[in-house]
Image (cartoon, rainbow, N blue to C red; front, top):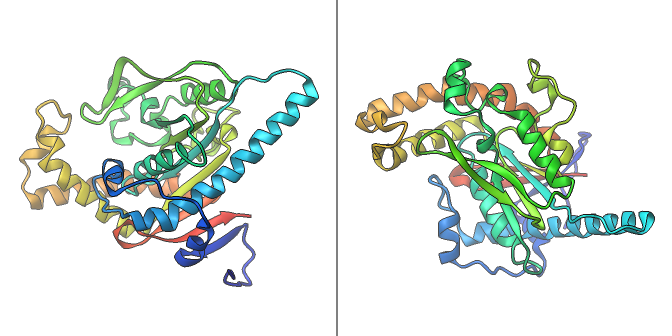
Length: 316
């Protein structure tokens, strides 16, 4: 396989789909179409071919990194002559609203749980570390939800720090997309998994994103391998509007939904509403806070039409 040569100096190696697919080698595909269906998001019609082409080579790469990580831990064990606590390998997945981070996270979870051997892989979203709705209202941050200041960043950093310290049981708050709020007194309990996949808008952000809340540690300090899922903003907005319309016909129709009032909108009104939300909130957050963190990732997956990944950039 030959990579495209360029005179541009870059910290990344760039692969097109066919080049990346060659790196799958002999990694088996253990997922079926039936297994794949519940992993998909509202927007996506992702195929097993996409899993073979993109995610199997990625699973192979991550497994190499995990092997090296375990060897490094063994060196520390020998040097200190003590048995260190079990520490999970942490993978973070960042990207814009509507880009398909959650789908990528679920597919990786499914693949890494069974290859090359059965492993415990936990998936945590940073939505659970948003401030509760009441707090956001008190701070006048409802229209800044998803922006850095809407997260309890100290609690999130404490969570990943506890994981990397080998704490045997760590709790993560649970977020409800139905009520648009943190569920009181309910938690995801993480108990010594082999791998933790941490998915969210803010997992690559640094101190520059939190000028009013300075801190010396960042989520990325505790992450072993980071992924950024990328796409042109025109596509992101298009996918967001499409998802909004699907929610209007499904989740929003639930009387318990925070967005129930949107279910009464006509299609034209719904498109306009979604477009406004994108321009005033999600698109603004993308440009100001999310996109600037892209180059900090170890791997960048760039999507084209139909959520199909066109290029892969791997940090050298």
